[in-house]
Length: 354
Ligand SMILES: Nc1ncnc2c1ncn2[C@@H]1O[C@H](COP(=O)(O)OP(=O)(O)OP(=O)(O)O)[C@@H](O)[C@H]1O
Ligand SMILES: [Mg+2]
Image (cartoon, rainbow, N blue to C red; front, side, top):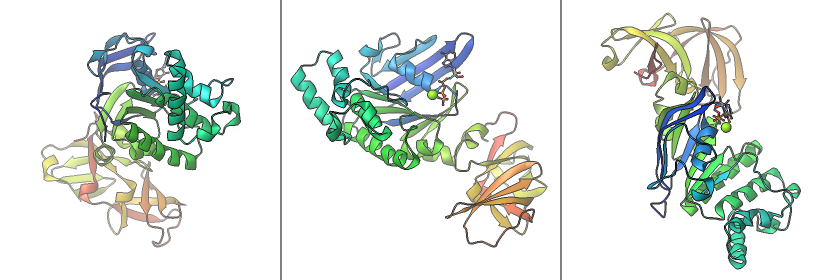
């Protein structure tokens, strides 16, 4: 748990423009002390912009930014008590690891004896104590990434800003490192704002996630909230591996009409007949005797599961199933069914969840 009530973040109506392009359209965000908070969204949605605004590296065109009780909207980066870790690590190549880690303390005029102890502590926390005399060019990618982390934690900032810090690591190291990163953040009790476009990474590391789309926040919640109840079609189509299947459908009374088939729907939704988008997760679809007519395109074998790619009219649908079912042939006609509680319904016109 957080050892402090220190490190809350507020963004109020923040607008950011690059020329006549609006990168953030009035961002409202509240992050609590000690949270591991992830900014998730597709490329170009405004995640890095948001992080740079929090760091003080970008001016805003409207709204305000608060750290704890202070309005820092126009404060310099050095006045904010935040540390940022970039995707590129941004280490100084001519300095040793120890000098790199010590750099932020040197800048603030910390006494030498204190610096040595702080560097040793930070290096120990990320398991690089044995590398202090080397230069960045003599380190692996994963080791460089730890140096960048040690440099970020050495000042004991109240806020840790991380922009895709693991994206240069291979898949296995990335999974190990993200677990360590979360342990480190917990043990320091520091608030972390972490940017990624990898939804799987977001779901495993976050206390809460904010989903960005085109410079707007479309949903904030725990990973579970967002997985179980995506707020819009766009979020639904972004979360999950593979993501949710989306098909045009219609509600008529208490019936849901989709792909020429008919299902019962929840009475609460039956008040008005209307066009909807139906979402069903690949793992919630099953092959059945009756249901939506579909045709097998091909089967992807992941070892512990199969992803069956299917055509429903002109739409592609994926079904995730156990590997030990009956064999499926290319072009084989099948039917798809799902439990009514597995259906996610969105307004066709607005994309909002019903
Ligand atoms: N200096 C700039 N001048 C003009 N446009 C910019 C500038 N910086 C960012 N943008 C634009 O603002 C939008 C948001 O950029 P941002 O870097 O925040 O995206 P992102 O969500 O971090 O994407 P990625 O996942 O690719 O890193 C993008 O459309 C980008 O092209
Ligand atoms: Mg970015």
